[in-house]
Image 1 (cartoon, rainbow, N blue to C red):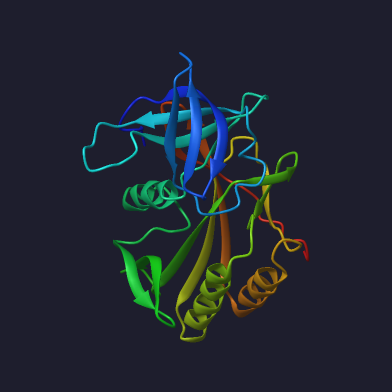
Image 2 (cartoon, rainbow, N blue to C red):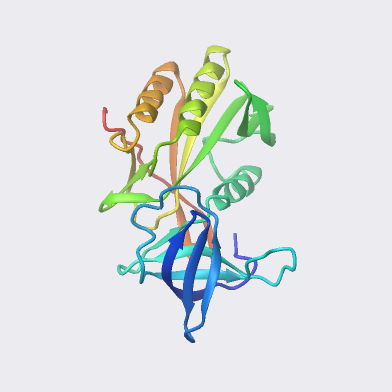
Length: 235
């Protein structure tokens, strides 16, 4: 999945109000970019970091740049746009590129559970499959990606909704999409949100299936990578 507009490098000055970031372009110009990430972005918003922005000339948008990537000193990349995983995964599901999730029909944002909308509902091949997607960007130990990076009441609710689907005889999957090129495995950050960790454990015991996949990330685009091992702290 290519970026619609070629990205340009910049230096992060500061991130603030969650959705705004002041950045310095290569020529010294300072601009404000939209940050499509409501999380804490722990470890990703350090002033002075090398980042990549997507320019736009859309007259409907107040900000002319969107923050898309962090480039680490190691040369690895992290994607910070939390809207991208669903779009990328939808394309992969439609193309049948996720062998664990192949079905004739893929629908997005379908109502289910307690006033929720599931990211994807797969039907037409065996039991209905409910798939919730989580964007994973946190890493506090080399090679280990963690979710969440902040308390997520919404994520906890999703785990309960998925568990309920298994009790109705459906298949339910929690899909951790790791927007980091340096990750070798995925785990749960139980110290950050113990309630979410408990919800995940209960959901897995109820039959919810965990899936974790990496991303291939460059300033040119982001595509689905290989499956990663999911190793919760209680395993």
